[in-house]
Amino acid sequence: QLRLAESGGGLVEPGGSLRLSCAASGGTLDWTAIGWFRETPGNSREPLACVWMDGEVTFYKDSVRGRFALSRDNAKATVFLRMASLRSDDAGVYFCAADRTCSEFAPHFKTWGQGTQVTVSS
Image 1 (cartoon, rainbow, N blue to C red):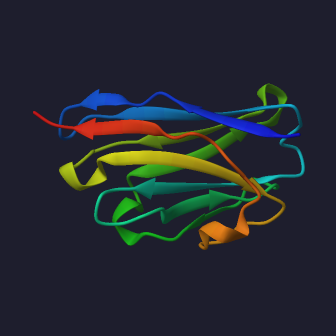
Image 2: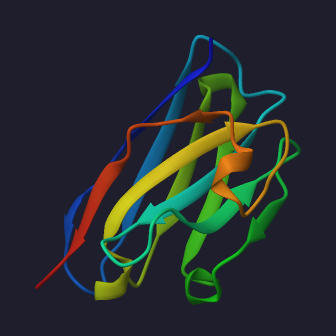
Image 3: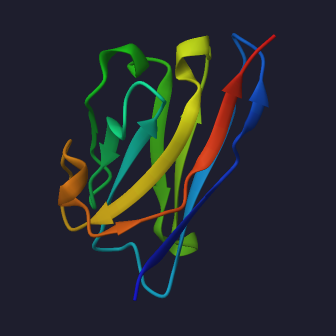
């Protein structure tokens, strides 16, 4: 059974950078698409972006385009979310989710991680 675990969250100042990891266990990511979602008190599980099994990336939230980058290392069973030029509205709990294909709809994904907190503050 595939399981996901996010890590890399923490406190970062506005304008700073952070790299989140989504590590898989109990299975392989070779045939898996990984989506990234962000949860805030005002918005539950909003879609950010998704990396398809072939490495193609789809962005769903315009405000992260050009600042966030997705990559995957199937040998390490890990997907990365690199975030730059962070703003206060980037704060929240970041989740990764796995399924065979990408989607902007959270219910599409079969497997979810526990989330990692990102705080943007000076």
